[in-house]
Length: 621
Image (cartoon, rainbow, N blue to C red; front, top):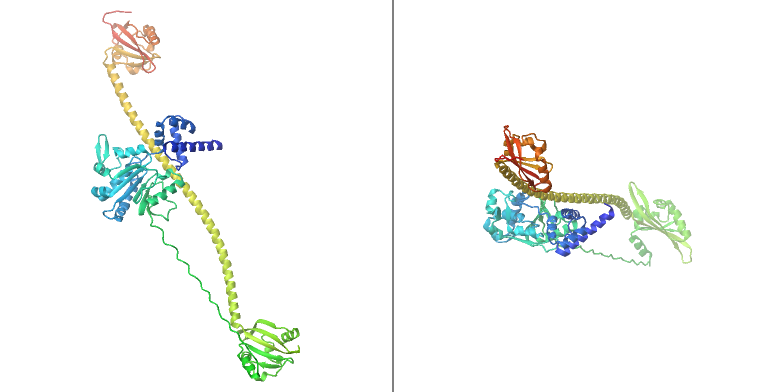
């Protein structure tokens, strides 16, 4: 089939489905198209219709065809306690827990969705009656059986089943819950009142609520993914917390772990999880504090006050005059660099501090010459294994007349700050390295996550395909089972007809055997089709020697050629001929006059019947 033909066929199928919905209220738009198309084409082949538009015309002119089509689409394959292992798990594990969750006087509610002809709903009634006892089950348990097939619901409401349909039940349970009603068995009437049947479309109608157990087996597999999702949403709403969902062996909940727990994946039993948790924890707030600063105001009024202030300065301070002589050393400079009062008045170049931790003489000349302040940051001073760091500020002193009169050198100990800065730098570098590694790891994780996500999606796709294939196989299996049941029915009908045919044949053989005269039946080709006992006794030939042999080729005491004209005339005219008397010799060699009567035979393909008997009046012809 070409692509265009496939598209046209799909459009024609959708048009037919819309017609079914508008004409009869059966909405099959959520069903899988492969299953629908196959079932509809099966019915079309049965009524010898080639296209969907022609079949729609057939539906419009023959209202009875709707029921035949719906019976074909809605495959009602079910039985009492179908899949015994699953029902055993339900009886041993689920039913006791359902009963334990309810108070002794509280109602237990059960729903059999897609119940077909009712065997599943009655199986549930038997199961709860066995667990609670008949009296308590009749007062507490309410079972709802629903389906879209009205014909199946009528059968379910009757509660009548054949002995073959109840074969999965033990004889004890059958006699306990079913009463013999002629050739069939009816479900016991008192417990039957607790089972309520009604039409319900699980894709459109509001679900039955507050359920303890919901059974929907081999129904979801006929719907597409969107319809299945909507149905599961309705089922989740219908169940109480901790209520159970029982599905068919080809069905499962693939992406609903947040709403359902698995009670038994093998038996397809799931439990509704409790509701969601509370709101997220609120984030805390962040407070920011500000620091305060202080301003130092100095005023040099006297030398003594100047010295006190210089000693109070946290850094080490030196002053050198224009001649390069040391004129001032504060207390921190003496302590920090080992200077003394005796170093005042000495040439600055003679002191170690002039070249260690850094060459200051050239910097002092540069600052004086350029008349600007110079700054050296984090100069290192090594004392043994210890390292000190100083920020050095070189400031030229200019007189009011504009001439340089000296230079001050201030040392600020930044060892801790430098070490802290170095530590911060190292930590920053480590953090940057770690961040880069984290970024690289994150990218690798993202790549891995994408690959994993891709693998998960592929697995989900494969799982969906497997699930769809499994559902298709299960659908095909049910179709085959339905076909087998039809074949069994046909075989039974053929057996009955064969018995009737055997009886008729035995009756005919008895009639022919009871006739004393010889009776021979010839077909239109003048071959022997029947040779009775009278003919055997008269001519001495057994029936197995003459059957399907040409009558005129037989060698016996009757001159067959003398009868040819009479036989051919009887075949042509279809009228009985007058008796013909022929001289013959019987099986023991006795000469006799044989009276032959030729009559037309209007059975299969036609022929003639020859009645032969010895003439008593001695006539001849």
